Length: 384
Image 1 (cartoon, rainbow, N blue to C red):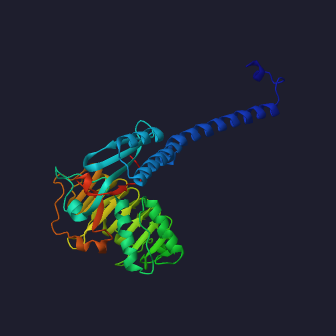
Image 2 (cartoon, rainbow, N blue to C red):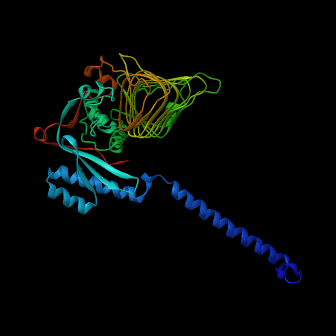
């Protein structure tokens, strides 16, 4: 303390040096604190523990499928080797799980007795709220689009022999990207090819590489997104729409979907959307009709402020409590917060109408008796 009071004891250069030193230490300390804070905020699916869990579960299910072996001793040896938990569920389905921490896990589902099921009978004929309804863990957005795509390619591009057996959303997107870059059936595009249009339209089976934001022109008209009938738009990124907009047609999104709201605007989805992420739709959402329902399938959660019309939703968690009036179905792997009146069944849906909506008419699921099928089917490891 006396050192600083004695003018002869310290000169200005030293004072400045001390100040710079203190500032440097403080800056470094703050940077370290912010760095530590950012580490805490990193998504769990970007961590090494998550990647290791996915690798372990994926290896286990592939070995089981390759060996076609569900014997107890064999499964126990895989549990020990890969540090996973394999549990027999109902109807011949097994869960394969790897814990990341006390609240997060990676899980895959498998059956050794899969058979083709009519998707209307097993899914769309139900509202999802029946006491006897149970969603098959093998029916996911990924398995649905993976089942539909080879048939679509065969019919739309007969010169292409389609690949099959996709086990992840990303694998399917990589395949379509390869076709687009080779200009084989699909066309490779950048986000601006859609965003800069006055009336954004994916003219011919587009694969768009990057996030897409369909924003309305300043003081201009609302911009919709249109995919012509008989075609599919693939977006390798997020899709953001703005207030009053409508999505027409069939879209596959390798990311999140967000539709914004302003005031009392009404947004619409008149088509089928597959989302490898979450869906958030603000404000009022107008769904489809009996003849042309809306279908939104998400690997993550779906939140809709208010929805009216005919629609079907498949996701982890669903939230739409604000006086929504939905005819169709809501199918969840976790929980659903529904309107007070619940969901009204649509008795008019028929499997013959599904192809135009980019939905398979049949899908492989577990059979009631394990001896009636021999096909091994599994889902890609998923964070829950």
